[in-house]
Image (tube, rainbow, N blue to C red; front, side, top):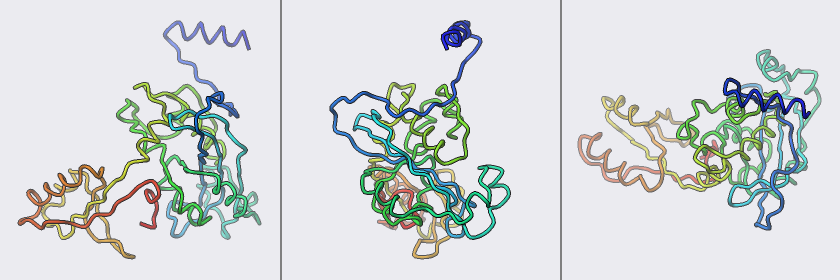
Length: 294
């Protein structure tokens, strides 16, 4: 090991090489500081596809860990990992991606009691792409619905920190480590390792995530906006909702609550041929964000 470190130091000092290390999961990041601690759950699912309306979870991992309000991570607690039989063959491309075969999941099931015990302790669930994982998780156990959620993609502002991508393996590489991905538990362990790092701005990754996850957002619906304004709305960051199941059919934009009045004024002055006044708004916080239920 000493010889390896000497080689690493020599190569790094040359300025011509950058050394990255294989992730070795640890059970503690910080010594106990006496700060009030909370329990977070880093979650990852492997599924038969992307659409939670028709696809099934085939693997779930939950890795609980202690953290404080300043983004320090303390103990990493024992993980829960389980396969689940989707009741139909796993698509070949999913097996190629994850290594999970029909034989591995045959007759297997996620234990709702074990999941429930972890959820009872947790204050926050984190996933790398919570918009994908949360709808699947809520199908597994109703306890996921009442918890606060955060996303280690959307709640960190990676682009503002100078990163050109947000995939977990890319962010791991940029922070000096690599891992064998696309299996649920190791993806969670890599996610926690990433949260333990410090951003170029000097802020802990987890601290930035906590601050952003605590925000309240507004979804502003530009209902009955003139068709000829669709390109203007797209350029301004609006997305189209086709509607259905109680959801409006209209252009919409998610933005911080404090910016809603200014955006509403813009729509009234620049998009609609005459002022329409107040438009529909939905409010989202950490308990509702990324869920398909709202």
